[in-house]
Length: 134
Image (tube, rainbow, N blue to C red):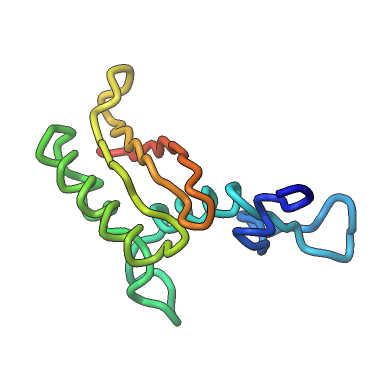
């Protein structure tokens, strides 16, 4: 399709974090396409359920594991929480796989690898989200 961009399929919205557009000082910075989905995933994973007053269910339950031992059991629980949250809150994607494992270079970090496909154009993407446990 000539002339149709990724953002034409996936939409455009406010970028995260919200801020002014450097090219249009009166406007808000926007994002679209695959980048908008990537930002949305990071926002979902970074939000604790109950944190948003008008949407108390929004977010991901991984924050319940912040004081857990960084082991395979915690990694499994985190993987399940990520799958459930993305299935509920990000309808533009199909989650193909979620794999969480302790970071070999940081014993307080759990690396969450998310493989997903956008529903509108079947493009596949990968995102690695670092999660810190105490």
